[in-house]
Length: 292
Ligand SMILES: [Zn+2]
View (cartoon, helix red, strand yellow):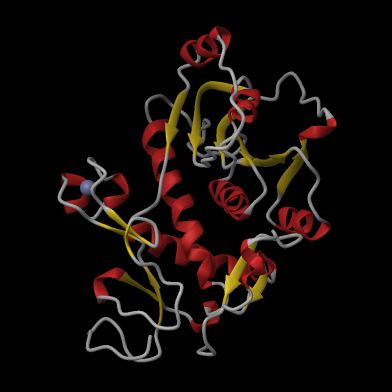
């Protein structure tokens, strides 16, 4: 931030801009445009507002979240994907209370979570699942690089390459399934492993994914087990704040893993990023100027 008359900020502060801007519906009016009731919110860089892909931008203080530690200058960009994850876990906490979900100690130890996908959000979902205490799996239909495996190991996350016809044990029952792929066939594949009172969170979207069939037996599985299937999109200011707290905690407790999430830093004029997916990419960053 260059300058501000706001009592909230001073020159040189690091900030993260909030993406969604409220409309007039009740959810928007209470600061939760992520739960907008009529779709009339706006999203910077997506609908109705310009984004932040430029050297400088003007923004009102109420749309900025302060990054309290300069230590996060390089990894603070992870706030954007992580705030979505924090909000999705808020959804999980709400819907899981429809029955007793936790173990006899009222914790999540011993509960199993599986995250479909291995891109940036999948890692962050897995890391947050570990925060809760879930035995956590991340699954994709291909292997991942050793550096990514090491990141999983650092957080005690188990990676599963299910292209290798992995046979899960008979008692492998998921309590939480999170999809970041948007691929119907993959979701259904794991849906039938979800346990009684389990929760399925759909986060990934992919309009180009091949059609997938959901069968009567799949519906039966969901109904007979009281499984909750819900979508979750975006996040509100409170989730940005919590995401920054998590990034700070992980920066201290998982030395090096957070910085490895940033797999490439590009100049604005290097547009190759938009045509060729960089090898081993987790999070690519475009650096617009030399302000640290
Ligand atoms: Zn609204």
